[in-house]
Image (cartoon, rainbow, N blue to C red; front, side, top):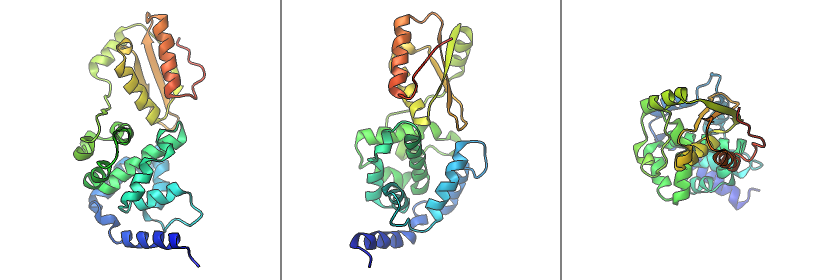
Length: 248
């Protein structure tokens, strides 16, 4: 005998199943889905693709599934309440794999719901949630594939790739560097923190796009010791797992 809660979930899933792929046009979604989460590549997106295929096209999650699995399943099918719960997941601000997974799931929701549907749900969230979404999706949005204009208008964060001038400046200045491991969210937070402090205007951070997340941080060789110490502290706040940071 199923409980009332189980019946509600089944009813919602069944009702959403008919409209799930009418949220955004199927052709548009398939194109973006293959672009952002290719089936075969050397990047982590392909690993997420296998999991996302099951969530998108698989059956209703069993009762034994964790709440996040059910939330994602329903949110992808247009459930506003499931979307809201996902936005308030403790994994949103988590360090490491949980936080990274939240970011990739956020990007999937954007693709599936489309700019119209995603922005409508996101507009009901508070500023902290909207900015968290910005940090999750802005670094990944391809300018060639559309900007999701309505969604981007809801948050102020903007990912700024290194300009040619910055690259030339980096080549000119004598630097020392270190290598740390950062997830995409941690890297975004680091870039944002660096941009807010003028002392670090000549600090450069570049993250590799492979699954290991190697991040190269270079600083001017003549950066004052107090600033170097504060920079290490800042990195430690963004990525607590980084125990030792040594520039050489």
